[in-house]
Image: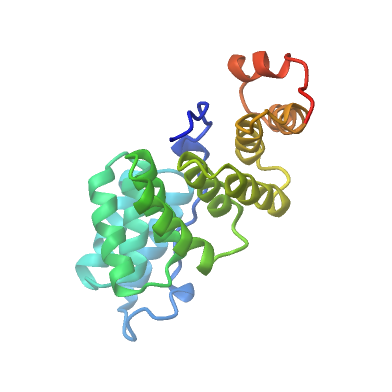
Length: 222
């Protein structure tokens, strides 16, 4: 039976991804025109200031010049994801991983898209790829923990989320999610949940009345 999971603080606004730079795309096409590199740089600058229409225009220019550019595909996919154009983001990122499997940024966003669509097996496959390729990325560990938790694997969820907060002790969402899955234990691990929930509040997470009600219950004997 699938466990009922408490609401999780997982919003696109809290997701942190950086655009792929040409110098980091080690298997990019050998010849990339200077004008395409300039367009990619313009797109990255626009992305950093959250000017997604300008970033979209620049990255599309990259693809017009180099249709199989990983920089163009991944970065335009990120822009479409942030802009809420999920089908287009999915299309671009799947093309990117088809060209190059070792592409953790693309796998991470594909996993998030699948998770939001409640395609948990697909999300697990994508996020596992991201974790293999970028094992020290706390965002990957956070979302992987949520997905395995939603599949009912509570111990595995806790393990991934503990790894996320070890990698980034200031990651509010991971502390919050870890608290959620400590409360999913039978019986709930109240004190551990309390510790991570209040740490998430210190780091800027919003209060959750349902969690606070559960935390007021006396800790059961274990």
